[in-house]
Length: 196
Image 1 (cartoon, rainbow, N blue to C red):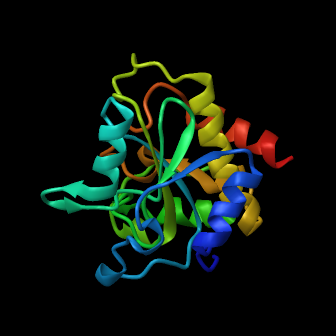
Image 2: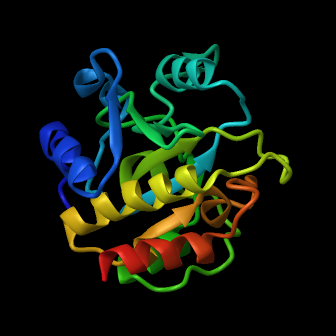
């Protein structure tokens, strides 16, 4: 368990890891902290957006929509490989998930299949939304996959975590399928390589 990274340290960590970062509006103070705690944090969660078009995707993830206010993540990773920071603090990205999965993330080992929704993931995880339709056919450009791995590695490196601290939304709850189009084992392989 760890204290959440400061906004300045997050920016520095991402840039040191080789990410191209775009700061969106007042991202450092844009959060849902009034709805509950953020932290202690235990890992990084990867999502797909079910959207196309970078500008629309970033706006949606920053502002949210009726019934689910933004920010919907901490960073949006667009197809061009840029990491758009849209929030810092509690974000509406993870929702409820399985406490057994959280225990595995804390222990930095393979997660079991999720079968419960009894734990608030918005408290425990950094979230990166990745621009993709999520239909298994929309391509994932190499520059985007590299940026996802680098963003996750930046957070893990800051906290001293390994690649098992990075999970997909589908590994947190059986109600989700994201990210679709690549495997989280392959992504963790990329993260582990960067960390080593």
